Length: 301
Image (cartoon, rainbow, N blue to C red; front, side, top):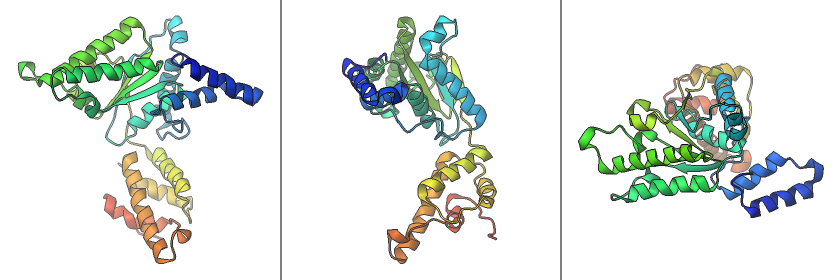
């Protein structure tokens, strides 16, 4: 319950008392932490995340360590204070970070380039301090920094951008301070260009996890999950292999975009046939939309 306010703990006790023995302590604690930290995605669970079985196993292992950092540390297990998520754009790195935060009952603070960069010297350093301060306030927590290669690009000697140098210097101070003070703030960052990150920043990440493009099984599961959400009709098991083949090389974001186009196709047909009551998405909507996302549709049976 570290990082929860007295009000949060009182609310947890009240809800547990109201539910009696049927109350799920961890689930209730996650709900209250999510309410206190709006960035926590209560729906980000291991069941909803779409990655390969091997990747999920690695992520769950990392999450277990962060969830009980003190317990593992007491057994001389090293705790990763900095974790770098690598992978191509659209592979789901942000959702991975949100899932680890939710499943590990951790606070979640997200920072982007816009959140950290300043307009003048001194401004950027203040932004970095503020973001780290927010993460410490809700610890144990995850501070997720997206596009680290843009936030902290490799410095090029004396000619480096002064604002970039300021961000990197302040980030190094904050990250080292967290380690020295043994504060339970875990830094997760995402990049698709790790080679562009400043070496001094990169050296602070004790663990690097690769989030690859989805494999065939993950792509098929993505379609199945989205089909269910879209209430698709005429879905047959024989479609799975075809959709998996057509989506080869796609990221999860590409597949979401494809499904969005297919939905628009189905909406247009529904409008012509009476409106939302006539809406249903069928296999042909996906195949007809495929060329718009760079997919060569296979002949239909």
